[in-house]
Length: 380
Ligand SMILES: Nc1nc2c(ncn2[C@@H]2O[C@H](COP(=O)(O)OP(=O)(O)OP(=O)(O)O)[C@@H](O)[C@H]2O)c(=O)[nH]1
Ligand SMILES: [Mg+2]
Image (cartoon, rainbow, N blue to C red; front, side):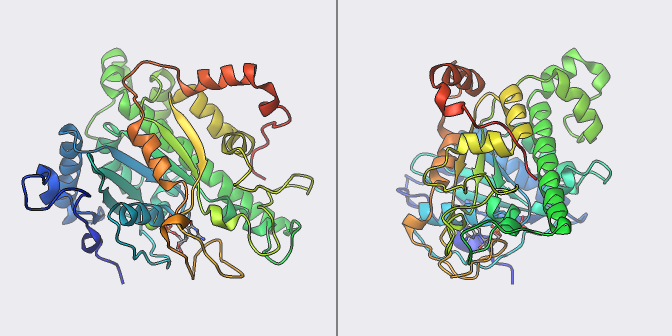
């Protein structure tokens, strides 16, 4: 059964729903699930987009996109953030798939602002990277106008799910998957990378659309109709860096250390150390295993950050990296989620300063030992 997201809507912390302290937006601050699929939902979709943009224009809160493959933990991440902010525990660990053509909008109550987290269906996101398929309705009907005003983006990557074939909770060592399994894992990995890259391209072009239209009318960009992937590729070349911050969240961090395993084994022949979120440097992990994405971020995004997050802990002996069946949902088992939200919502972006790529170049010079021996490898 689908939960009614509205039931979980909580009044903003520190404000009453009826008194003078209530923000004007409160009447509309309902978390909700929208269906983009049919003609009937067109009006509702338009209304939700307008509300989102109005919420942002009135500076009531930022609009943050949340994207990743199916089962990488997007919906639980958003649910837990909202639950935690509202001090109302109760998220359910069961997988409640976000279906193709659905978008969840979660308003996360905060002291001053209430940020809207837009949780996309993993299936639509995956399709976005497949150039041979039609552009998902998600982009055409919803994402294109929203991306033009997006304040921040969180890209989710669940390595425990992607690398499950190399890891077994009963053994401390690396598994040896068959050639077919390895090929399958590689395909999923590739499809994830294509999707992240394509979404970033759309975001970069959407954000710079006014200038691109003025300077390069040949591109024929339209603010109301989403361009094709190929048109976005063309426009991407001359677009400016993305100003909206991008966080790459390595989700399900509780599943790196399980049973006999002291850390998560990356793909490969077996020499590489297992990754432990307590000691691993997430930036270097991103550079090593997602090198293409790392380069795109360095070259085309002004501010970005990699970090581990977990929505909760699965205490089972044999937790399933695709789908949790048990959970410890205390406040302290949610790790990294709030700081990821803070990164994409609270950085003083308007103050001119160093971009992340420049900061990293300086860090390489001053802090060479951090970078040595961490050559990019990519996913197997
Ligand atoms: N162990 C563990 N499991 C998690 C975590 N976050 C999510 N899960 C589980 O992973 C499964 C998928 O999580 P969802 O948040 O529904 O995944 P999603 O990314 O929204 O997937 P789609 O809706 O298909 O795009 C569920 O069974 C969750 O309970 C986590 O931090 N740790
Ligand atoms: Mg979901």
